[in-house]
Image 1 (cartoon, one colour):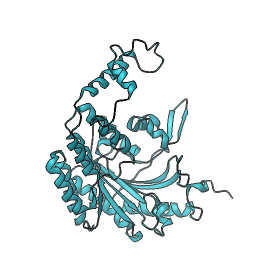
Image 2 (cartoon, helix red, strand yellow):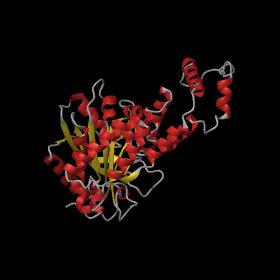
Image 3 (cartoon, one colour):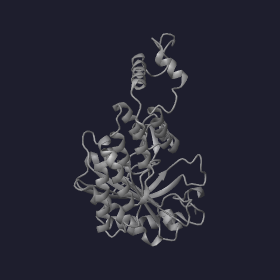
Image 4 (cartoon, helix red, strand yellow):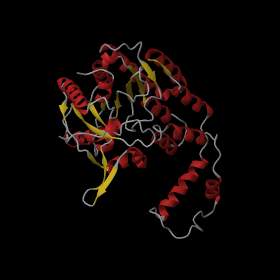
Length: 375
């Protein structure tokens, strides 16, 4: 008899059954329930408008999109965090701990060997008070669950790079653009080089900016932007072209931050040295020190824990502070077995005037089973 819950063989290795993965997902979720988390469910189809507002058109490259006349454009759930945040901000009490399990869907147009459908089990913590304690709780719970697998744990902190951008001696518009592209390393680097005058202005843009009336010979408007919107964009480009270039020393400090890749104690000392010349990161570095203390209290060997300042920058764009991942050194081609981080800004974006500090993480039970863990 055909299993109505069967899935395509390409979704996971052929020698691992969906039954085994679901059993492991149930076990993991029960562990989070035992820690006081409330079980929540979210719809598999999510409104595309929300995700597009958050991530822009780039989300289409990694999500499955569909539409109908009644519901409009929808996306197969790319992860759980956004709908869980929406649910909490609409009606959740404080503090709150949530857990969930279910399928997520990611397009894999480049690497056909990676699953386009797999199960996630997550733990999300919404709590005011001391962020370092919440960060440590989420990391330690996942760390302890995965300890039998002997995985490599990596931590980072995107908040340090954000603080560095905020401290640059440049215009607010340039800072906003850099913050927007922190999660796109190549674009971020191109912007830094352009703002520092290291990249020439494209001839087409130079001609546009020098023209007395750039729209004089533009012809009829056929796009979605109005004439006023186009004019405002040209004015913004002209203002940017007139701004003073970024100082080379500031770029060197940004590069120094991005190059930090040490154990946590060594990374902390290196970042404190950088903060002498870039005081805008002092608060973020102090939060790193507080988190290290909180992790040590929970039994984490902080002396051996790795820290990479650039970790997490090519993943989902809602992380804005502490980030972490657990990977297999025996099978480095596997995606992270678990990952997570802090996403305070996301609660503000989805909270309609409200916000609350939040941190969470997800485990992929299919990878746990593949690596010989679980039940």
